[in-house]
Image: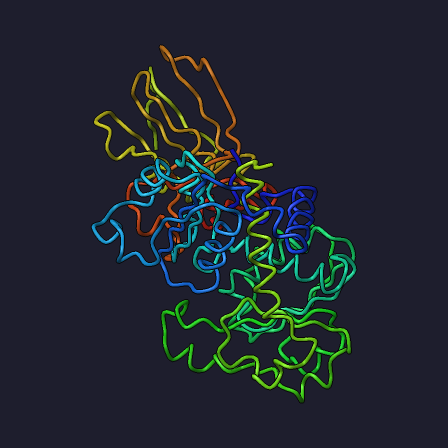
Length: 304
Length: 140
């Protein structure tokens, strides 16, 4: 039984298969409208989410399947003190696949160790968010036509930004990728991302603080939100939250074919005035996310 | 200073000077009711100085992973009837189970008290272990 806990759980071949199927589903959704008939996904969301939960649920519904689950820890037996393991063992009796979001890092990994059905990590604290990575990869593939030989700038909260960690892991497997890591000193990527992921892959990277000075060299700009919920100290959040704001003035410094991605939700880091720029892909990215989740569910359930 | 040799038990030799006390507690030797001798800063030809622990207890099952994690150069000698019947060097263990606790306050182990703390050796050269749940690192 296959789980998706870390983006590296998928080989490059498996990743390509999912992205190809996602593109096919995007082009011909009607062909897959009954693929998961009689199957159920349980969305176990221990912390709030709009996009990811609704994306999983609409993905399953568009495959002809059904949805059960909870959208906050307060709505479940978790509020009575039930462990993650017991919740998963129980829900695994009802559902064919489980998508789990949890504020604590490693909760989906723990779930996968006891679950009778496949577990999909839908985000665990500041750690990983592999289905956002699949979404990001499908977006890059559709918008740029390839995944290799690209300079990707990741900007904002690179320390707690789980989508950043997952995307770096996934992109590090493609040749000729360069990373420009743009963040304040306090929010740099964790050391292990450099020492265990980027350096062993032999890829080049630079850690910088200025978005203006570096935007001109990027093929992809991945903006992230400084996440209030990851800070123990409110004063640190307030000090760092508006470090980077992408606006029309900065976009004039960017290449004509650079694309902007954002895992959303955004707060202030992208000015709404940028939304009409054709290089802004973040709302199209949401749409790709549903199709790539449809492809992932089909693969994990071995639906044909 | 003289400490008698033991008849049946275990001798931990070549302990890096200063590590004996940590091994004593992490191996749970403080909870044994037999004689345990600990020598610190003993002169050593190879090491300059070293620590030694002697446990005077027959058929004592010692946790080699704990020793390997804390001090992988240690030699474990099994003594039977006053004779060394086995001598082994301890390597860095590939996996740690409930030896090191994950210190990441955001890790699932911080809120679920009954799950095992498990670390895998991910970088033997730099002696880095990572929590299997959150990937936070630990070093001996």
